[in-house]
Image (cartoon, rainbow over all chains, first blue to last red; front, side, top):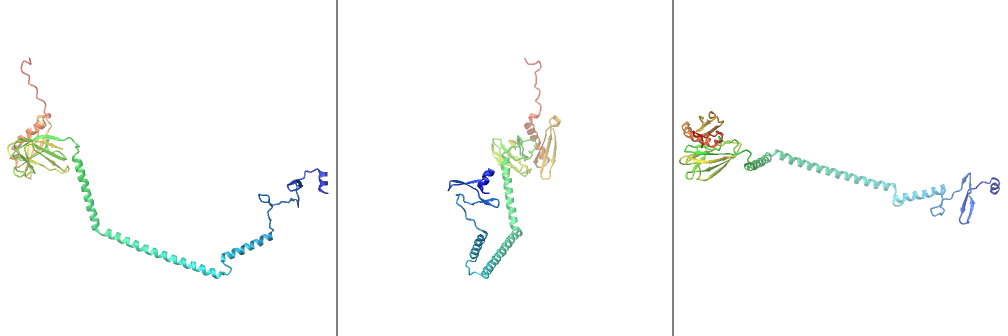
Length: 244
Length: 71
């Protein structure tokens, strides 16, 4: 039965394809129940399709070219390759030796540093000097604190008058010496007589003089009790005292 | 006022006075160079100074009103 007869008999709609070159529709052809397919590129040009035999022949040619490329030239042998590899191994060994040499040198540096550290620790003079410096710094800090504190009045000052006689007596402003006294100022209020101050051994000859109308300021360590005595060079006289 | 004089070992003598007998809570202490005799000599001056310096602790004296009242 021909196709025409089949069409007429079954009135089947046969799959067709448009042939632009012929400007006509043709029936899609095939065999063994499968339609024939033609592979083309995006532009519609048919591509070459290799058979298995053609493909194997091309792979063989490519592998041969690759082998020659690896060898460099076709005259190279496996012995040449082994020699080249041996050279690489030797160079690697040399690099390793140099690295170990660097390690040894580093060990020497570490040993030298350890030696220096041991000498520093073993040298008591260095530590003693550091302690001395620390002591000086502490002293400076304490001095600065005192200077700052001197100008600060933490509690009310004590004021009063004191009669200074020819008997050396302790000088203070209140009922007794002010606790933690930091400063005392003495003003000689006598218009004529001079008074002298000093320790308990003060006399009319060796005491530090305060002229009539003159003043004397004495700073104290608040943690130490220091008595100041005053004595008149003549009759009883008056002095104004302030303690902070 | 009561007082106590104590001779110290360092050539000084301490003087302690107390005004509690007068109703004033005030104790004062000083020291002088010398022995008890020197302290006794200085005591009146010390007492006077304390009375002057702490005068505010003593009560004000009663004002004296003349007999017959004020005209």
